[in-house]
Length: 186
Image (cartoon, rainbow, N blue to C red; front, side, top):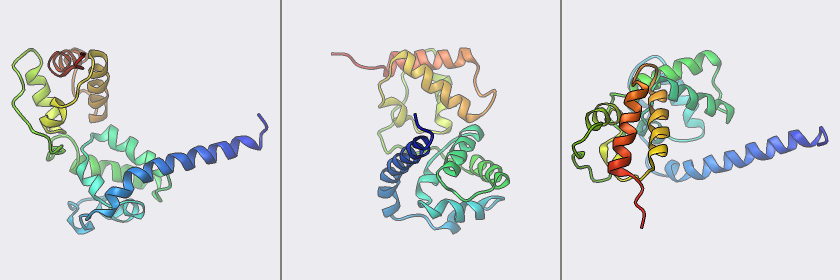
C-alpha cells in the first residue's frame, strides 16, 4: 500500500467510528439532559461537566455503571475520539466516575420487568455480583449461550476491577445464566 494512502484510510475509519458513536448519542443528546449541577460532588466533577458535555449530554454517563477498569477504558476511548482531557485529568475522571457511577451505586435501570431469579447453583452469585451494576430485568431478558455468558460475565467482572470474582465464580454464574436464560432454539 502506498504510504500516503494509510493516513487517509485511518482518517476514514475514525470518521466512520465517530459517525457510529454520533448515531448512538444523537438521540440521547436530544432528550432532556440532567444539568451538570446534578453530578455528585467530588474531585473530577468539573472536568466531567465540561469535557464530556462537549459532545454529548450527561444522561448517558449517569445511566451507566462500570468499575474502575471499565471507566478507564471508556475515558481513554473518549479521548481517542477527541475529548479534551489531559492524562492526569483522565485518571481523575475515571476515578470520579467509578466512585459515583460504579458497582454498588444505584444499579443501571433497564426498565424491564424484574422477577426473582430461579433457585439454583449460581443464583446468589448472580444476585450479589451482577445486581451491583444492573437491575435483574437486564439479565433475565437476554438469551445467550454458555460461551457467550462466560464471555459476558468475565468481561463484566474484569471491568469492575480486580478480585471481584474468581474464575470458578464466573464459570458458575455463566452456567446458571445459560441454563436459566440461555438462547431458546426452535
